[in-house]
Length: 300
Ligand SMILES: [Zn+2]
Image (cartoon, rainbow, N blue to C red; front, side):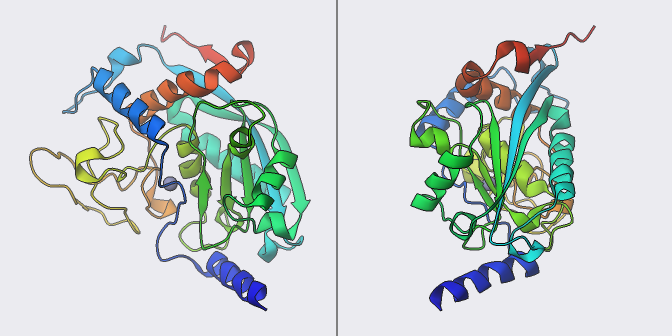
């Protein structure tokens, strides 16, 4: 009976909505925070009118990332975690559209559908989660695996951050993103139904933090992300939690790495784009095939 109550609560949240975006990736590894502080200290870019980090990024960069989408469901109905082939394709398209400005694109290599109640409901850090991912995970550390499933605890999603890993370790198998099934485009989670939960989570996979991560004085450790003292709920135009000369600009409520409604999110900053590649080069590039996945194009 206890299990059924828990399940009912989860599915209620999935179909009726959440009081605020709930992401489980609130604690980047210390190593990654230190790396972000180092990258920021090295930055020649300082915030200001019309400033852009062009010196660090002289040519537009592109990166193709192999993508594997795994749908894990309780049973093959839409309210029990199952998503259709069309849902997968729509989520894939949203990811590519949302990352277009960064030069990142995704190449959908694998789609799996698995009926397994324990895996579908597996909580983070559980034996069921590691069993699921040891069975389903595809590719190396430069391959993105997304598990679309019911989750637990009202979470919209969570994702691992990049780290120094050993291939074949539990950390390696756990690498990837978990996304609530009803957050896919046209899903049943009110306000979070355009597929941008996956975009937000994949931002973490690339090493981006929440825009409000360190509050007004720390933020996301990216120079051109305006300071933000608290997560955004909804789409409150004009929100400004960090005031004064030290904190120019309004809160970045339209940023994919805030907590706003899907309809409100539409941007990564230039600095986030640069950071994404810094983290990629540091942690994931060495695990990919250079010939296959990395291209640089000249502006001329
Ligand atoms: Zn998050």
